[in-house]
Length: 83
Image 1 (cartoon, rainbow, N blue to C red):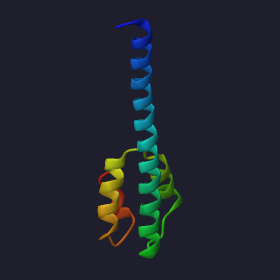
Image 2 (tube, one colour):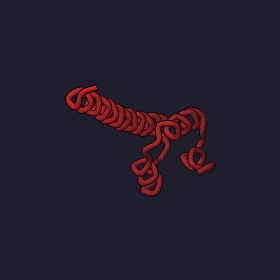
Image 3 (spheres, helix red, strand yellow):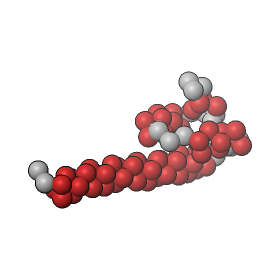
Image 4 (cartoon, rainbow, N blue to C red):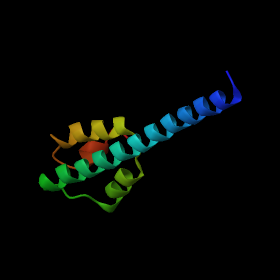
């Protein structure tokens, strides 16, 4: 493989990594917004502490778990009890 081909391959790999990171960030923002909408629509008050936890989270799996809990919980505390 030539140096030019190596550099091109490295650039493609870096581009894929950047794309994945951007996609993950977009997914987290979407999940964050969805969680807040679900809680607000259900009429559940969201404290400053809960908002801070939601804002600090960057794990899509955690948001998915929180969203499932938000669908059935009677209080916002019920979403975060396992955290």
